[in-house]
Amino acid sequence: MTEQSGPTSFANHVDFCTLGMFILDDIDFGGTRPNVKNILGGAASFAVVGARLVAGKEHSHAVSWIVDVGSDFPSEVLDVINTWGTACVMREDNNRLTTRAWNGYGPNEKRGEHLTFFRMNSRKDTDGLDFKYLTPKLRLEPWMLSDSQVFSRTFHMVCSAGRCVSIVQNILQRREELRREGKAPSSSQASERPFFVWEPVPDLCTPEEQDKFFVANRVVDVVSPNELELGMMFGQPGWNEESEFGKDIVKRILDSGIGPNGNGHLVIRAGKDGSYTFSRGQRIWLPAYHQPDASANTPVVDPTGAGNSFLGALTQGMVTVDRAPAKIVGSVLAGSAVWERALEALGKQSYILSSLIFATVAAGFVVEQIGVPHLSTSTEERELWNGTEFTERVRLYTQRLYRTLEESPRKHLQIN
Image (cartoon, rainbow, N blue to C red; front, side, top):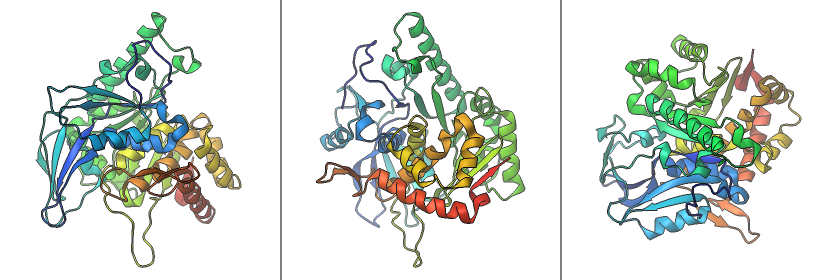
């Protein structure tokens, strides 16, 4: 783990930076199982896990984030974070407590990845979740980022539409100021616009926020609500691709524009049904990593945080086109004419295809336990997450995808 360096130190370049918040979760299962405490939670932890899976050990220090450490910060949590080897800036303040939340589940508990984001207020959710902060939260702002973090190649955000616009503007303004002062890193990437990936906060996925939603979409490269949040934004209980309502929503969003040039991506996370990605001229559907077997068994234990990890991995994947995971995808799908047509059609944005695969695989790790997946090292010094290599799961998933691409190409990819 690296500590925060001086304001103009660029010893370690940054690929990924999240402005998500770190939270310790206490979970009360209402007597159905033993309660647990000090669970790594919040958007930051899960997004970093996703990015770290894709980055691998070799590039772990290019994954950067901020953790606010209070006087009650558990040593065992610090040990877990240290094993990841990320560029984690630990801000210690013994005069406050670590941001902590209580999650209560009734007898009909049904934890879902959308529940991870209900962090704005104490609230009762229809899926049987009570949530409340036990200590004051400390939100991250762009001015808190180090100079190295400001020049990250990608940024991940979970926030309101208004805050999304403000974050993007502040980061771009600060980068420009540092360039004028001669304090920018020497790499050519420092002069390029970074990628911004935005998760709209669910509490504000309301019809009243629509206009702000459309404005925020135009400053980011990827906007990613889940299917429930997207429906809520337009006054419906959910989103479905097959309905006229669902098709109209996608058209309205794309017509309004995503990204500065209008060629960004709408990524709709649909839990067990995978993900749907739309841009002007393309539609991509990828199934979830875990699929029920013939007896309907599934290794899914707890989907909480899967959406954050999905997008952390997606974000990191956008700048990982020349590394091992992307090479595996390219090798497995090299014989697919359908895949090659998609790459050609997307052109400079073809990175989104492999990034979506990484995101799907990363989410598959996160759902296998309560909290974050376990990192260990094999006797051959290979990184193992929950006992398997990330790149091996990428290979297995891509092989499955190759078969279904050939059998039902339009089910996965549509190019206009």
